[in-house]
Length: 101
Image 1 (cartoon, rainbow, N blue to C red):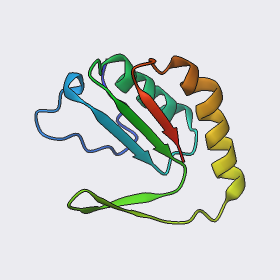
Image 2 (image 1 turned 180 degrees about the horizontal axis):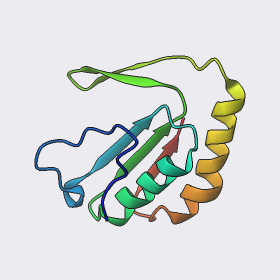
Image 3 (image 1 turned 135 degrees about the horizontal axis):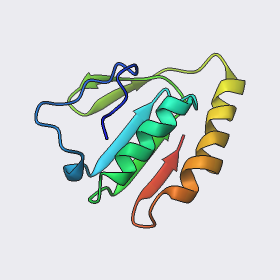
Image 4 (image 1 turned 90 degrees about the vertical axis):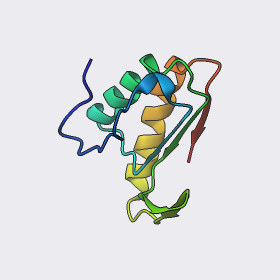
């Protein structure tokens, strides 16, 4: 399986999902492509311990720090949380801590 190309995701050099321990997704809005990406990462990441999905836009500023912006569309955030709760949460392994923000 190859990751979707239309999502503009930059994969680290020599990326192997089998080595992932933590995944943080910012700006999740519930699109089917993003749901498929999360399923891809879950299926190929046996070492995963933490999955954090934030419905607000987040930007990595460096040194393990993130800048979180407030969303202007509360309905979009609520829809995204419901997508995570109904479609993703039942498929997350019990060994993975899922956090929805």
